[in-house]
Length: 198
Ligand code: HEC
Image 1: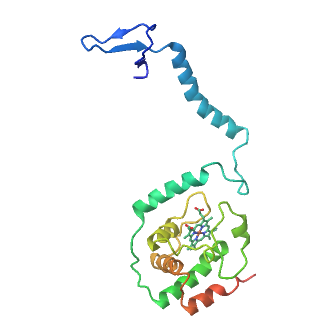
Image 2: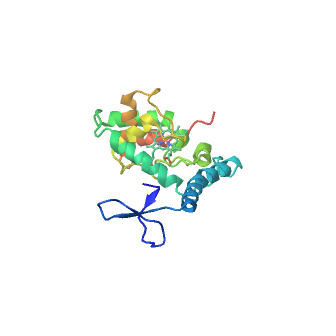
């Protein structure tokens, strides 16, 4: 299909497909070479760009064009496919309080606490860990947050907790985050205490 293309140029040599009345014209060698060069140039250019050290590898470097859009699309598609819908853990104050305790222990170093200054990790990572009590995930389905915490988000620094925290605790943290704007006072109290300095 690449070698033969229909052309309306009457000067080219013509192949007539017998009995069909269709005419096919050979594509010139120059066109083919041009196409081939075009196809090779793109990966070659990408290789030179990376090899000469232009690609952003520093965490502090700005994002590549479309980097965020491409990774978001991939992540959202996977989550749509895999995320569980409802929490098997009942929504009670005791479970939200336990979720707050677990969050404080595992997550606050990156995602912050209520009315506390951003940590060094919060300021220095790329992408930045969202400060979940400022720009939270209360509008995300709880199953989506559960998926992110269980599996992590590749190449962002967001760890997967599947090997270190029980499913039960991941659900409790996810439920706490889903209701971060209407938590019982005892949970809020846990999340307001500053992180220990030593
Ligand atoms: C080492 C730092 C770090 C730790 C610890 C960490 N995260 Fe993250 N987390 C990140 C980063 C960075 C992102 C942003 C990923 C991105 O931009 O796609 C993120 C993203 C998220 C998101 C998605 C936020 C959104 O707006 O969609 C959730 C939810 C989340 N983390 C929850 C948690 C929970 C719960 C814990 C603790 C069990 C935790 N994270 C621990 C770094 C961390």
